[in-house]
Length: 242
Ligand SMILES: Nc1ncnc2c1ncn2[C@@H]1O[C@H](COP(=O)(O)OP(=O)(O)OP(=O)(O)O)[C@@H](O)[C@H]1O
Ligand SMILES: [Mg+2]
Image (cartoon, rainbow, N blue to C red; front, side, top):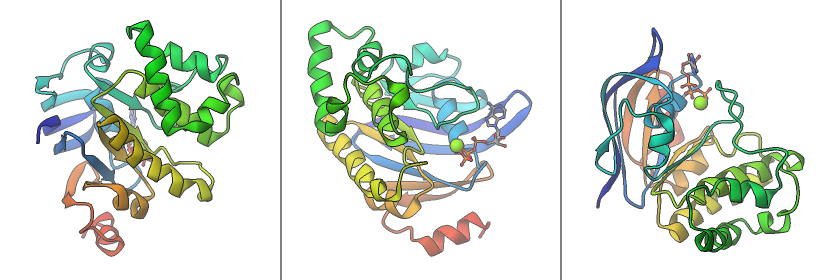
């Protein structure tokens, strides 16, 4: 099994504000890895660190075997990683362009992709999110929260990433849509053959589709192991510092 992402001894934060303390995490090829933890634990900061959007003080981050610490975000994004940020996020960065249609957003996300390939990939995206095909001519600003998440993920997939990082993709979704969404995440892994690093508040559902899991509490990894062997009781104890 080849490694897509390896984080070792990561100390990171923002300026003088340290958030992560000696974090180790691995994502193997084809895996869904779930990252859980209380609010403010540093989950988003860990993802931000991978793409160069947080300050890394020490430690190593390797993507497909290449050390990326110190590289600018746009360079890292070209290395086969797609990042759908938590929405809203502290950077004020929207994941989609509101004034563009669904179709135009997918095209906009495809810079550097050969033209013939763009339409092929778009079909792959529509295959996992049939709803996006129906909405192709709608401006993104008129989409529902769930539709926006689909579009943001679809835009990430247009780049044919090796690693897709999703930060709380089900936040704000209607409860009856949440189960379907988790199935789609697994579908994406299977159809695209990629690895997924998934940050979720919806622990139970995420652990059902995950292969392995990590629990981050106040910047430190408190659990790493199979997703199946982590139940809600264990999780609650970890969150409370047990
Ligand atoms: N861009 C930023 N600049 C400065 N501090 C930040 C920034 N983003 C997050 N922080 C701080 O870093 C700490 C960890 O935040 P982070 O967003 O990584 O946590 P999280 O685990 O993703 O939480 P949540 O579950 O609420 O999304 C918090 O104290 C937060 O206030
Ligand atoms: Mg977060």
